[in-house]
Length: 244
Ligand SMILES: CCS(=O)(=O)c1ccc(CC(=O)Nc2nc(-c3ccccc3)c(C(=O)c3ccccc3CC(C)C)s2)cc1
Image (cartoon, rainbow, N blue to C red; front, side, top):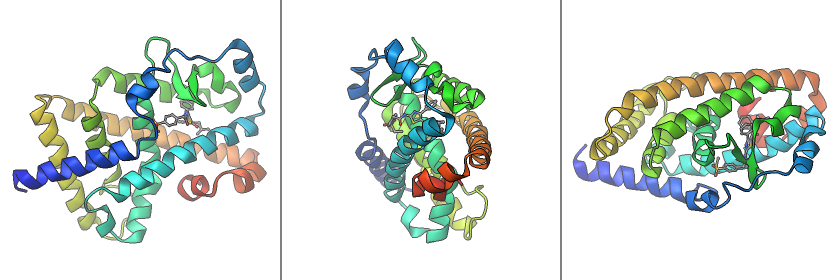
């Protein structure tokens, strides 16, 4: 790649990240100390397991929708076959949602943005998947510690999505070509920011994301066994399509 089109590649991925972010960082910084009251926390904790799962699945699906839009504007993604685009989104969209969510994690009071305010782990008690929630909070903490810029998050998110090692790809070498161009974009901006040391930390985070998402799938499988009606008829179709 000549430098020019690496700059163009980075610019289009950063633009797409910004345009599909749902919330801007400064917007949510202002809300950082808006916490749920005791009564609101009680209300979440008195929801049944299937009610709370459905509540979360709807919000998660909203967030995933924006990641699908983000993916479509990654140079080269639309050149891939429909099946390969779906395969990459099936395994990568939740990972990108987790990367995005960790931008709004408040490490001072261990809260995550949820339903318009900042929620601690106790809000998610009725999900009955404390290990998944704890793992998500730990991941968010770890990501905040890296203090990534929005541009670095944009390129990292694109790399999380365009991963030629994903299962059931039809044209792996084509995905590899797109992955390599995104990799050159990420290393280019980390070099420009004089932060090459982040590269191996980001590859480590990709490993954590993979285990987080398999834990999510495990919990979803457990949930749909116990609450088949909710999982099959009350979850958003996109959630079922991508995760079930
Ligand atoms: C992602 C784009 S964004 O603009 O950053 C954004 C956009 C919108 C929001 C608001 C929002 O939907 N927050 C949610 N928080 C959590 C959550 C929940 C437990 C711990 C940590 C965060 C949601 C989940 O449903 C979730 C997420 C990860 C793993 C597990 C679950 C529970 C499910 C699978 C039962 S939805 C936040 C951030």
